[in-house]
Amino acid sequence: MSFCCGASMVGTKGTLKHYRTQVHNVPLLFCPVCHRVEVHYKVENEYEILAEYAHGDGAFEVDFQDYVMEDEEEIFENVVNRETEDPNSIVQNQIDMALDLLSVAKQIEDEKWERELKQRLAVMSQRRLRLQHKA
Image 1 (cartoon, one colour):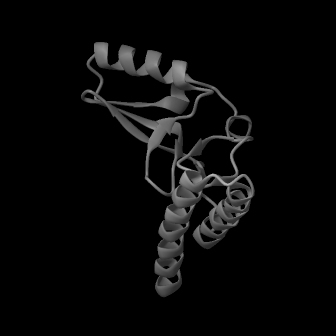
Image 2 (cartoon, rainbow, N blue to C red):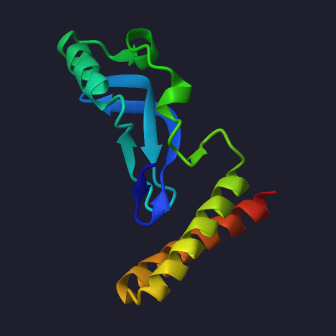
Image 3 (cartoon, rainbow, N blue to C red):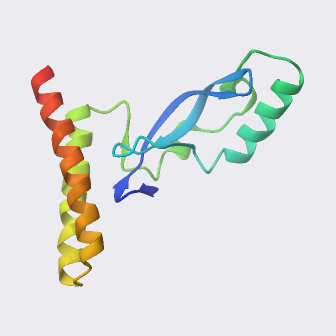
């Protein structure tokens, strides 16, 4: 499980740009709070090699899946949520985890962590409100 700013990162596939080369269908992790994106650690080396070779060959686009045969279920087996899930469910799950962590932070009297978790809860609550208004 990967975490960023107190939230578990969500698994997805997306496109990354490496210089002028776009690499499609790269397994990614992104943070629903700060929106940080990173290549999934299980395929990070493969991505770097493919991106460098594609750029060196002057390719403008490559599809990660055409060159790397990793099982998607195995790659994302350790993530709490995937982007293909219901957005309301993802946000609620993030809120629930942050509340659980907030309880721990209070028990160990870690005020800095409490403030960080409260800030993340505020972000996720706003996101939940926006999703509810869209429905």
